[in-house]
Length: 381
View (cartoon, rainbow, N blue to C red):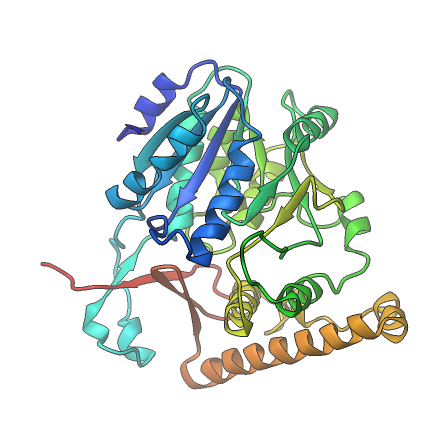
């Protein structure tokens, strides 16, 4: 696979492309072909690569050489696609900081290293830098690894982007779906886990209308399509030490006077998400991470995440009419309450809470918009 080192090299090599699909790869592809993590990763990634053509480029933004090498298999499976790889990770924290690992009671506090941003922000920043240098029409695509694309998705999003053009550029567009978990062929993901996760994140029955009326966030990290001409401005305006990068990018686009729109897609054949969540422990981890997003909102009530909102009147009606939804909702509410209790206990003890995601640990404090990013490892001086 072709490898580059600098954003300027990538920009020079990608002239005339239509879509740049920036795939953020945080670890090597699992080697065991029967491993359900590999099955989910491959199924989702192939769904996206299948929707790209000869005018498009896949930009793998990886954590290391082993990850790059593990992706070579996709070049033979999609020979019509140009694939480029780069290794990008967050820089070390350069400022002064309290000894958070010791203050929060972590094991071996001397073995933790702080970083200046999340690994996702590091990869977003690289993608924005590359596309910000391109002086021709086209789009940066930034899908999460659990995004599943179907036929017609990209053409539809591009149509919406042009329909809501503003300030001389097409709009940035994201799809949103109720199906935030979905079956993947060849895996044994229990139906119960899929239904409870979709229920937990779909308890606002008016959310499709809020999206339609642009009353909520429109740029989403699970999948976005952003014009090249917008990327340099976004990169300049965003604050990269916050955790919820999609909300930060949404605000930067709006402050810049450009268009940003979301579309609710109810057809899972066109767009859905299939995360590697196989059991209650995995589901709890996703819920706990989401609950942390609301902690750093200045002035927000602790636990004010939308996950904690009670069912509205329409939800209560549906609970009474649909026993399956009633059961799934009770399970979801119990998990949300348990995760919230864990967070509240940490806040009372330490004044902060944290969650592990991938190779990093993220620390949030009530009302502080900045997130501390840490990684365990021997620090060489």
